Length: 248
Image (spheres, rainbow, N blue to C red):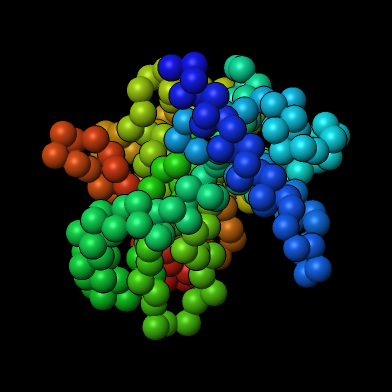
């Protein structure tokens, strides 16, 4: 077991050095350093500490820290606050989804997504939850005039949107308490920031099976979402319709 772990770590280090080396004639050094960090993560090495990343990627600790913070801000890496270890974030995992990860789910849901867009005449989206945030992975746009706020691959890490409310509402009581304990920015005058008010809203969503965003994230944009469940009743994704306020 120890030998296997040593081999996997060595391979991760080799990938990191490869990403940080090679013919540097046309290389962007900062990008190469960032890729050398991402190259450390694989199935056998899912988490690293800052010191481990710096050592194995061959980077000064402060350089590694700045690179990690940059990737954190863009959701490419996520830090576990309990053990201070980093793992791949939803921005990178959503790319995996778009390439192959959930092709079967997308194929199943796509006809319903198209039907939803046709019947409403508005943009319809499919979102999944990755590492606690909602990621838009498919959509059917509207032919009607609308400056939409949704794009495939977009990440929304809060409950000021209909999809985020769906994922939060159907979590366990303990997980929901964790969500309610977080601070929330006042994005618009309609954003629900009070924990008690948000708790009541999530309870309503869980009971009725539908979530609304009435200009909570963007003035001029509203949305309604519902869960997509598997055979066991677990929430796998969320379907939503995004509408300009004037047509909601």
